[in-house]
Each structure stands twice: as structure tokens, then as C-alpha cells.
Image 1 (tube, helix red, strand yellow):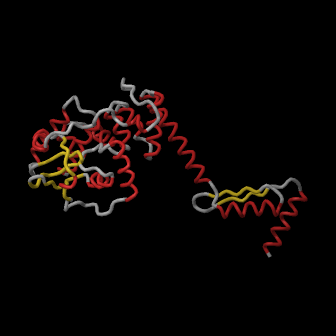
Image 2 (cartoon, rainbow, N blue to C red):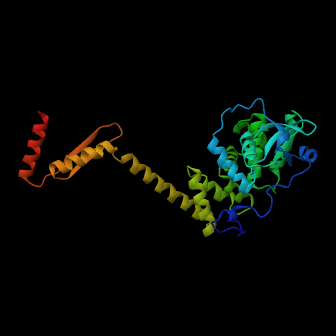
Image 3 (tube, rainbow, N blue to C red):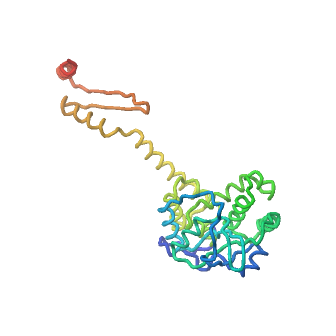
Length: 297
């Protein structure tokens, strides 16, 4: 666990960094150093080759709300296409959400040309630096894959990093922004985040994150927490799978009342099942048989 103890409370304010996540550079300096610049949103035009045409409106609203609270965690990437004009390369969802959040500027990596070799050299050199946090490294990996159309295997050969290492870094970018901010500001380590990322949904991940912060859990304790949460979720799913449909419950209850005895009804995935009717003595059994025979006719 990181030594910093800021933000162990449970409120959202505890997750907001005390300092900016980025130190924006002037555009030309950002281009030459692969640093982040702050670009005016109304000077960015859409990418004509954007493959995604439909965006989930609710997801955009949620991201916009997160941006209002935490800012833009992952910078977008743009290409300089003229004086004070830029074209989006990647990050349209973040750009749209930033507009919805009312931002006038957005952090962006800026490229001036189509020189892929220049970008490759800059980003690979960036990845080798020791002062980068895990999110910055993950973003560099993602940029290489998106902008140079590389697979994880190709990226592994290019950077000298193991494929599993790359996958672990990229997985961090799927975590909710709150957790990414926590990694950046060293509230949790990458090992904590890796454990939390095993949870199947963002609600569970955020819940685990708060628990880790509140209790100051070690990596091992975080892994145990995640395992416990996953087991509970699996038990809940299993109960749901084994639960009878409402119509079957109704039939079972009707039989119980009609026969005045305990009735058990089970159903498997294929639709096959078993009906068990209990009786306490021979007289009750005869009544049940009579009832069944009458309804058979």
C-alpha cells in the first residue's frame, strides 16, 4: 500500500486529487516531448474516420458527471491541422463528455505530422521512464496500439515488455475514473488496482476501492476482499438461476392449498423438473391419488 494516507474518508471529495493530474505544456513543446497540452475544445474537429457512430447517451452522461468531479483522466489525442486548429485522432467519447460537462478546454496529446516513427520513438522512450505512474504508462501503451494499429503481441516486441504486463496496464484504463485518479495520486498501488479489476462491474469495483481506502488494506487483504465479493456474487447468481419462474411458484402454491400438504417443485436448465408431493399417512395418500385421478379424466 502506498504510504500516502490522504483521502481515507468515504466521500467523493476524498477521491479528488489535491493537485492537477497533468501539468499542461505549450502546444509546440507538447508536440516535441509527447507531453500534454490544454486545447480549446471548439478548435478540435471530429475525426472523419471515427469507426464508432453510436454512443450510449447514459454512459456519456455518467462520464460527463465524473469529468465534472475529477477532470479528464485520460487525455485525448489530436493532430495539428492548421494554426490553432486540431483534428481528433482518438478519444471522441471523452471529448463529447467534456463538452457535456461544460469544459472549454481538454488535456490532449498533440501530433503535428503523420510520422509514425517519431511517435513510436517518443512513446517507447516515455514508457522507459521511471517517474511515470501506471496510468501514464497504460495511456502510452494505448496510444501506440490505437495510433499505430499495433496488436498486443506487436507492442510487446516493440517495447520489450511482456504481453501479460501490457495487458495488466491496459486493464487499468477500464477501471472507473475514481480508481484511475487514485492510482495516479498513489492512494492505491497498481497491485491493488489489478486485484480490484478482477471484479466484473464498475459498481463492485468502486465499492471495493472505498473499502480498501477506508481500511488501508494491503494487497493481500484486497485480493481476499475481492475473492469474498466475487463468491457472494456467484452465490447470488446461483440462487437466481435456481429460482422458479413465477408461474411455477403459483402452481406449487395452488397444489399445496388444494392437497393440504407440502409440495416441492424443481426445475433444471433444460426445462425438465421434478414434482414431489408429501403425505403423512395412507389416508392422505389416497386423497391425493383420488384428486389426481379425477383431474386426469
